Image (cartoon, rainbow, N blue to C red):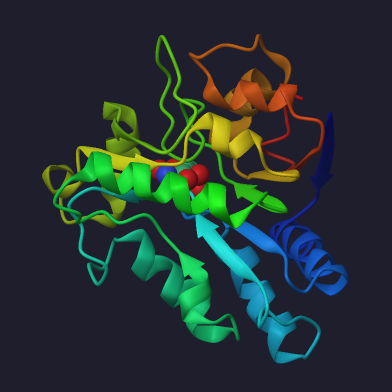
Length: 242
Ligand code: GLP
């Protein structure tokens, strides 16, 4: 079931996302969070940091599992998702570093790293809340449109459009990794609750395809329509067509 919330500005967008995460932690301090990178959740993380500083929320007993990581970027590379998470959230809250998990992008054997991460997820138990952004081509995590989708964590080749969209963070497009390790659609859909967030006019069309279009591997986010508990937070621009 999709519960769509449209908010009027960026501040409310961030407050709504952070509020959902904070109230989960208040009722279940040991919550298992599935976290995402990209520009969409940055303001949500800032708001969570504020709530933490105000004493409203603690992550001390919580744990987190991130969706994805670029293959070939070391943890301390400025664009690695591990570094992103440390800088945008983990370093500013009381989550224990050993309770934060991001797939490894530098393993000698990436396929084994994917299998290891998948085992880690299975042993962790069900994710209580999975936060998701949305790629322009309908990807979630790095599950790119394709003739078939994979359930568990796996290695993917990134779409030209995805690499182009993410090139703004790198010196040039040649530096954007060609592959990534990502939780699969199966792992994502296993979460108890999913929080999908999108903002900006450039997302309006894909938001409509994902939420109202046919369920197809050509739009991986469309599989969210099959999940029993999805909250979608959109700003006016991204929600313009739904
Ligand atoms: C990235 C990430 C996704 C993210 C998406 C949208 O490539 N792998 O997890 O949701 O693209 O990014 P943004 O929020 O910057 O639009």
